Structures are given as structure tokens and as C-alpha cells.
Image (cartoon, rainbow, N blue to C red; front, side, top):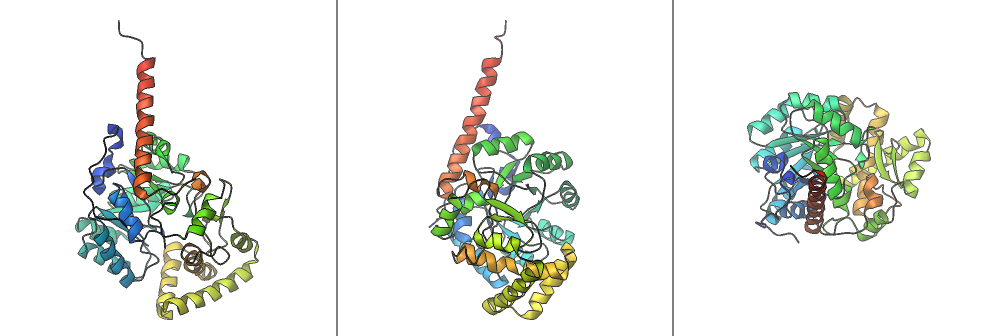
Length: 372
């Protein structure tokens, strides 16, 4: 169990002290993303205690569950942490008010928040960092006054775009004058240095933090991830109508090959199961569907398919049953081979990055002709 800590940061190359370290109030330019069912208080606190920025998930929690999770995270860490919210959530304003009352340092968004929400949070002194998948989205939220943007390339797990990180990242860095956090394809210190070379101020990782000893994902599911190769993920719209990168499993392959009408029928069944399991009122489900339809321009068929996501993710990532649930994961899944603690992972990444930078510096000195 993570405990509150006043850890003294280890000395590293000065280039590794970036703008987001001061912006977020953390020691290292490493962010753990707000993964549904995974970024629970224990993982969030473990990341923050290790000197990175842990981000608590909100999208898969009710308002009451979120309040409890915030309180629990505060019990486990005295370091800064963030809360990830869906910008299109029907109760987004109420959740923003909760963050303000609880003095949460950072608010991140899986989908762009309303401009009024950004203003409200910033006026309360909260750092706002939405996730974007295109340059135009970064430009738009930058005009609204957000403090930073998280840019996820196509390599990332879960909902993702089509542009690789190595193409998208420099586009966004050149387009905005705020710190950019790079996500999609990062898992070690070499990647951190590469992101800094592109102009980013740090990296964000989901899959790598999912595969730690602090992650709540069942051991059998973690082992399934570890057994995968870099070609064992697939991007599909078959799950919820929006491109999503998941591990190739028998269930994922079946969903992809199913006829569209059969997928819709499955979505209706899952929506009914979701309502029974959570007790969510149909009025609230309809309200959220309308919100998604407006904000994402989805058709009703896609809205029904979107009911797949919470039930399928829960069955896999919480229930530990890959035959009943899908498993979101980035392409780096095939490059991860162990399950360190968050503290061990962050220390390893920082030491690797420090070594790369010092080697490059030494090579440059060695290649410089002696003066005179």
C-alpha cells in the first residue's frame, strides 16, 4: 500500500526538469493516465508518491464513487494528483465543483471540456490539461486558456486517432505555446528523451502503468498482456463505434467479425446488463446518450454500441475474464516484460533517460576538436 511521502527527488540531468514539473508540482515529467477501472486511488497515489503525476479515473465512477475515490487518494498520498473527467459527461459541472472544493491540483479531460468549465477550473487555481488527437483540437483548447495539452498518437491504447505520435507530436508542439505532454508508445527512458527532443515537456503512459505491481488488474490479465507481441493489438470500431485499440483476443476478433446488426443487438443486451448492475436510471442513460450524440456527432446506432465499453472493460480489467471482456492496450504491450512497482518504474525511466542524455553529451564533447 502506498503511503504519504516527502520523497527527495534524485539528481538527474537538468534537461529532465521540465515545465510540467513546476506546472504540476511534481519531481519528474512522467504522467500516469486516467484509465477506466485501472487508475484507482492506489495506483494514482503510488505514481504520485514516486514523483510523477498520478491521475485518478472518473469516467467509470458515479459522482458518489468519485467523491469517495478522491478522499481515499488523499489518504494515500500528500503529493499532487489529478482527476480525469469526460468533457461530455452530463454532470461535468458538478464534478468540476467537486474538484474545486477538494482543491485537486490538476483536471484532465478525455474529451475536450466546455470552455466555461475550463474557465471555472482555472479561476479556482486548478491546472487544466485536456487530451487531444489532432493539431486543430490542440489549437482550439489552447485558445480557451488551458494550461497544457496531452497529445496521444495512434500507438496508444483505448480510444485513439490515426496519426502516429512521431507525426502528431511535432505538429502540436509547433502549433501551441503551452506545454505538451506526449502519449502513445512510451514505456522507457529512451522514449522520454525522444519526446523531449520533439519539444514535449514530458510523457504520459497508460499501458505501462497498467502493467505494474500497483495496478489493480488481476494477475491473469497482466500475464496475458505480457505474453502479447507488438502486433497483438488492433484498432477497431466494432466495440463502441469509435476507433479503439485493444488486445487481440478471441472475443475481440469475434466482435470485429460480427455483422453490424448482431453487434447492435449485443450492445442493447449489454446496455440492459449495465442498467441492472449499476442501478443507473434510464433517464440518466438517455441523458448521457443525448450528450454523446451532440458532443461527438454520433448516430443512435453508435450510441447503442457505446454501451459496450464499460461492461466489456469491467469484465476484462476487473473481472479478469478475457472471454467476456475486452482489454484496452497500446502497441507498447509487446515491449513490456515485467511488473515493477510505480516507484521502481519511474526510477528506472529517469535513470535510463539520464544515461541517454549524458551519453549524448559525452559523444558531443568527444567529437569536438580541441580548441587551439
